Each structure stands twice: as C-alpha cells, then as structure tokens.
Amino acid sequence: AKNCGRNTFSYYTAQMNQCAQRRLAIEEQIHGALNRNEFSVFYQVKTNLSNGKIMGAEALLRWNNPALGNVPPDEFIAIAEQTGNIIQLGKFVLEQSLKQTALWHKEYQQDFQIAVNLSPRQFRDPQLVQFIDDTLKANNVHASNLELEITEGVLLSGYNYVESMLNSITQMGVKMAMDDFGTGYSSLSYLRTYPFDVIKIDRSFINEIATAEKDRALINAIISMSHALNLKVVAEGIETEEQCQYLRKVNCDLGQGYLFSKPISAQAMTKLLDSTFQI
Ligand code: C2E
Ligand code: CA
Ligand code: CA
Ligand code: CA
Image 1 (cartoon, rainbow, N blue to C red):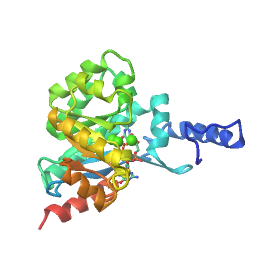
Image 2: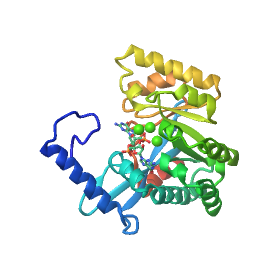
Image 3: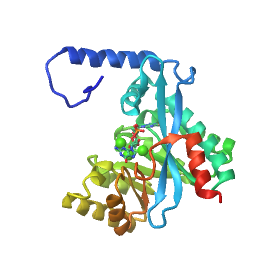
C-alpha cells in the first residue's frame, strides 16, 4: 500500500495493481464503517505563540478498520469525496467535535476554539449551512468558537454558490481559515474574494525554516500581509524548538505541530486540558 502516490510515473506493474486493489478495499470497507463505529475524532492543540497558552484544537478524523487497520485520512478522505461518504463523515466530525467542545467549555476554557476541516463535496450539500447552524445550537456552542478550515480545492470546485455559502457561514459568526496556504495556485486572489479570518501556513514552509532562507522570507511576507489584512496566522507542522522560536520572533499568532502535541483522542485531550487548566 506504500507508493500509491499521484506523481509516481511508471508502467503498468504489479504495484499499480496493488494500489487499485487497496483503493477498492477502502471503497468497500468505508461503506457502513460509520455505523460500525470505526471512526473517531482526534484533536491537535493550537497554541498562542506569544504566551504559550492553548487556544483551541483542530479536529482530525481517524479510521480504524478490522481488515485494513488504521487508514490515514490522506488516503481515505479523497476516496470518501468520490463515493460521497464524506457528507456523512463531515457531519459526524462536526457533531462529535462540537459536543466535545461544549464539555471543554464547561470544564476548562470558555473561549476554546474548535477547528473542523471541510472538503469540496460538502459544499455541494445544500443543507450544509443549516446543518452547521443546527449543530452549534444543539450543543450550545457560540458560532465564534467554531473555525472551518478549507483548502483551495473548495474554491476551485467551480460551484457558483460556494461564495454565498461562505458568506452565510461567516455571517453566522463562524470563522473561516484558508488551509495549506502557499501550496495552491491562486491563494492571493482567493484572499481578495472570500471572507477569510485565518491563514494556515503550510507545513512545507515550516519544515525548512532552519536551512532555507527563501522559506523564511516567504513566511515573513505571508505574516506581514496577513496582519495588514487583519487575518490571524497559524503555522502548522512545528516540530522543533528552533522553528517555534523563529515563528514567535516574526509574530506568527498561533502554532500547531508535534512540538506541542500530536493529534490525540478526546480522552487524552481532556487530560491535557486538565493538567493545563486545573491547579
Ligand atoms: P490538514 O488539514 O493539513 O491537517 C494537518 C495534518 O498534519 C494532520 O494529518 C496532522 O496530523 C499533521 N501534522 C500536524 N502536526 C504535524 C507535525 O508537526 N509534523 C507532521 N509531519 N505532521 C503534522 P492527518 O490527521 O493525517 O490529516 C491529513 C489530512 O486529511 C488533513 O490535512 C486534512 O486535509 C484531511 N482530514 C483529516 N481529517 C479530516 C476531516 O475531518 N475532514 C476533512 N474534510 N478532511 C480531513
Ligand atoms: Ca486542516
Ligand atoms: Ca493544513
Ligand atoms: Ca494538508
């Protein structure tokens, strides 16, 4: 199942056949997996870089299947997009994470921010906006505590109602974050057109902070531009103290990455919040 990447050029080989089989197995297994309770939501903390405080977390989907083991989201999300399963999965993540956030609000921190990823297909669901509103209300979570992370893929999807859906969502008070910033083709023009509140600098820029002067220059430029536009900046994939120091120095607002914590279960996250907020 390794090397099933998109950019591997090769002749038809046993390996390609293996990839096709893996894909088929995933398609087969994903059907009904939600009802079999194979999915769960993990959480990765977002830290305020200026004072080190936990500000919130990103919800990340996990799938454990008896036949396939742990299937990484990079593998199954794209397939769920094509099969349409992403609609149900996306609802599950939003419901679970808002239910959990309500508990954390009560126990630890009233302004804990929860970020949830939305993929292109979810924007073809005419009920998306209503579903977000209903789920916030059902769990008594204020709209401003929810952030939705989208990539260029959503905006590229070419549906003319994406813009009006994004506007309705932000009018509710929900925040919009542009994910994987810097990896797409027209990130800047999207910033002009759509109502973003947050930019997440892609991990690939953070990786090379120590060695690549160009990446540092780009990070500085992204941060100054974002602040001029009144956007908050999150750096993702912070793994070393050195990267963190640098990002703090150039006034990056928030950080996320293994340095702070890997994505962890709700239970483990509760323990983390417990040790952070209780004395
Ligand atoms: P993403 O939204 O860019 O999420 C960040 C990914 O980077 C996560 O991978 C996270 O575990 C990983 N990561 C965080 N910190 C570090 C670090 O310091 N180093 C490294 N090497 N990696 C780090 P994950 O959980 O495997 O998710 C992969 C992608 O799958 C996500 O990328 C997102 O595009 C998608 N995904 C995950 N959950 C959902 C979901 O509920 N809905 C949708 N639509 N997509 C999801
Ligand atoms: Ca994300
Ligand atoms: Ca990202
Ligand atoms: Ca990504």
